[in-house]
Image (cartoon, helix red, strand yellow):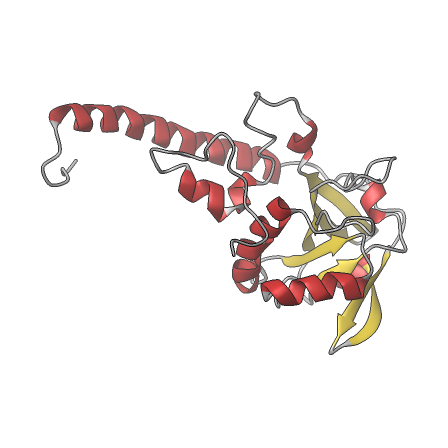
Length: 223
């Protein structure tokens, strides 16, 4: 392994130990991804949910089955924490979606993509304009039970940041995967980390000596 300029021997020894751990983590991530890809189809969706969206400024509706692009059979659908009673959207969801918006065109080469929230569509779009979210495929579930049915909302109406993948089959749309790690018990101070692999913020900070920080959370504004 080549050395960086002027590095001490103890640095290289520790870095080699870390490198072995990183290689093991890479292999474990692929092992888990293979298990995920091998999942059988989940339950067939019993309701072709009707979502609201805006097309060229005009309100329109789309069924769940219509969110699949031509020639694609998979859909990634993220539940964004912005309910009708929330004063502001969730800063954490917002941070993740800031990054996802930039990658959306690349993602759509392989799978369909959309983001849904419970607020009315005009309220969602007003906020999206402040973030320059132009690629996410924003939807409102204000008039359907999608969020409740697929764990983006609990019985009390609290919103949760749930990601789901759906697959279109000959007999209808099936659920394939959900970020259920959100609901698993986590180590104190770590959070669920259920969508962290999608999130540039944490992946960059994890490479630094300061790490994520015990109390740091992204904000909606830094002005």
